[in-house]
Image (cartoon, rainbow, N blue to C red; front, side, top):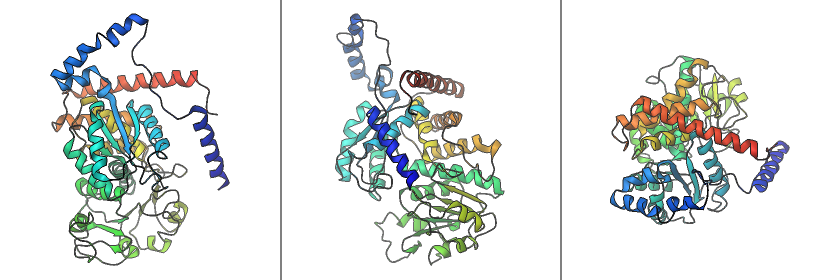
Length: 432
């Protein structure tokens, strides 16, 4: 705990020193007052007229082509709960920093002081003229499902809930890597899914689309194994579709029953240790894979899981091997969809992103490296290219581009971003 206290104190010192983590800077040269003839009035009026005649011109004439809003109501921020929109701002700023560093994306932290789901949706709809995409963040379940679905239907720009889709994509990528190591096929494995909140609900959806049989997915919530017919799951409950699509044999029982005979456990439930017991792992199949992703403490500590017989363990933490983190996903996904100006982000695009992450890691796969590290810059470029290609292939892109054009444009943006960051880093005082 003393180590954590040192981290917290140092973090506050850094935040206070720089008064936040992101800022806006001009992207255009300024040589003197006469430049404003073109950059502002009277010249800017012509850009306005062009956009009025053809709204798609906003992508050519403004920052819309490379900007997104990171929006939250602060109702489920990290492991802190409902801390409100203002207190969530440091997290949104951190997210914006990652977007820029690894994706070259201009992301605006935009907490919204509104907890009513419908009013929140309307506010987001009203701010979209300035943005090419929306990243939803840290919104409590089940409200997050409703908000995502409403915005995806009403907007013609990509909307992404990172706690759902980002975490699910990273989990699928890690699963691809782990299965490669243990030499098992995704179509044949049995998976116990512990917790059916935002992350695991989206993970189940991706698992089904990626080839896992519904009868081989056994989901568990705080009341036990889900199955169609469980008395507390009604037609209006978001868990209803999970019960219909998974556990087709209608197994019953608790967490231990779900894990018996499983090849994989994917847990995103409550902090441990002790949520998953060592003796339960002993009843799984050989070469068991455990993803224990609760923060700050996993459902079972990796050393305990290995001792109990697990071959591969992943967590959400950076101080253990195999960190399953959505930061590997969202910078590249948004870089890709913004580059080709996609109208949405589909599950099929997320699966392509997961495959790209897996393929990047494949040459070095082993028990303690089933997924890349966040600072392996090249992986973000691979994710971006694959996501953009899929958008074009599926007819979702406003901008038709060949693979070579996509690769060239994404590389240009990322190289330019890294060069600017290097200059800023050298100019400003270091953090250490």
